[in-house]
Image 1 (cartoon, one colour):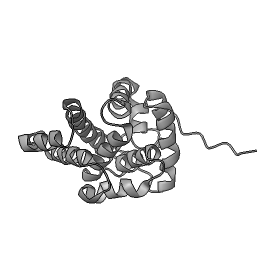
Image 2: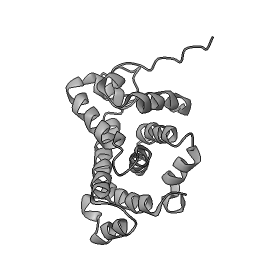
Image 3: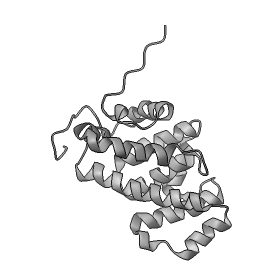
Image 4: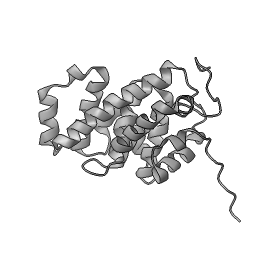
Length: 191
């Protein structure tokens, strides 16, 4: 049960953004920049970083919603998303992404946990300064998003079949306050 009076038909962060549209706009803009940029890291890699940090933070809503967005970008490869969640070191991903996930996991604990050796390891595996910057900011932003969602006890649907439709909307239309302020439309029946 949410700690504040929010629209209970909107799950997770969406209800919180609808509650306070003034804060929804900059948070949505940040998500749009960090997660949909195609320079350096791909949107799939960006979503995997967010999913992993949310998983470490035990934020059910965020790690499932962003995991589904990653699944969309990965052409339905749910097994890869699960592998990253549970043991990225053994997942079939690039060494570069593994090194960035190592940094993201350290940021999740504390920014001061990131060492020069972590940065050098990422560079040795092909990460640019921008890749490293974006990884740290994605990880830090997800700590904020996760604590926002869980700190106000927003509703996190346990039925995982509810996440793919919203994920497709994000992939197709992006992060924007309009996405958070209304329920997902049911798919139209095919004629």
